[in-house]
Length: 303
Image 1 (cartoon, rainbow, N blue to C red):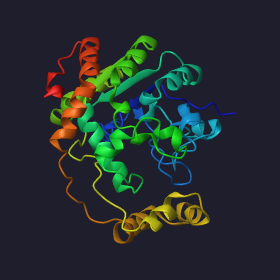
Image 2 (image 1 turned 60 degrees about the vertical axis):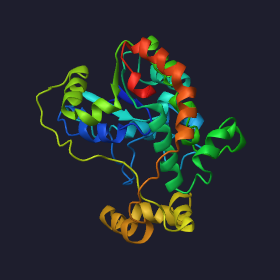
Image 3 (image 1 turned 45 degrees about the horizontal axis):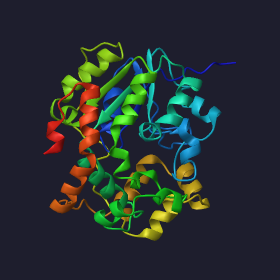
Image 4 (image 1 turned 45 degrees about the vertical axis):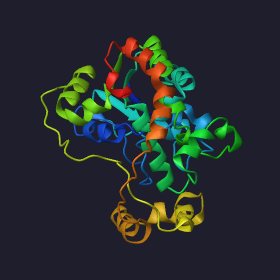
């Protein structure tokens, strides 16, 4: 019986902070394996399995079965680094840390990308709005955030725009529980990608002198469903979705989505100064504590 090789590193978040691009750059390395699609042709970049109890009723995709999770790594050959990227592992850090230790072991390496929490919140809001899940304005969604998940057990945790940006406790817990934790700042990743990737490769103990294509950003958003009925048809668990996933070739799926499902990219409206200032006050203390924890100057986040 074949014993599956399992992850020895994880990208745990934060959501809307460049994790998709990091994933795509990492899989270009010959010594790194990360799952992209499963045997059914479904995207599994973010399996979220290690916090399945928190998410299986909230997300339209994910891996909720241990055997299926193991099978994501069946194609591992000689790669020394095996990983996956599930951005909600950072937000649900208590459950994630417990299950990482139980399923993968205490020596698992952890990678965290952190983005200015104000910018991250607004990016998340626009992402959820474009998917048709968010019907409130940004200001109203912030005002109504408390207990929002408890009121709707099917709602994505992405709507916790403020709470997901309180990084201090999350990062502190990971640093306390794991020996190898590598933190990346989104601004550094965006402005000096090659240097950041060199440091990540060094952290993972793989060859650093490798040329990757880092010119393309991934999962940057900006597209919107033309029709909410179509969105539900694609996302809900239905016979149509089953047929669509199993029988339609990937190239044809992309053509269908481009021609029939999505509108063109629309410019994002700037955040109001009032909301920005409110968020600055909300995050200020957490940013200060995070800055001390990481021994990094995060003053630019507070401007």
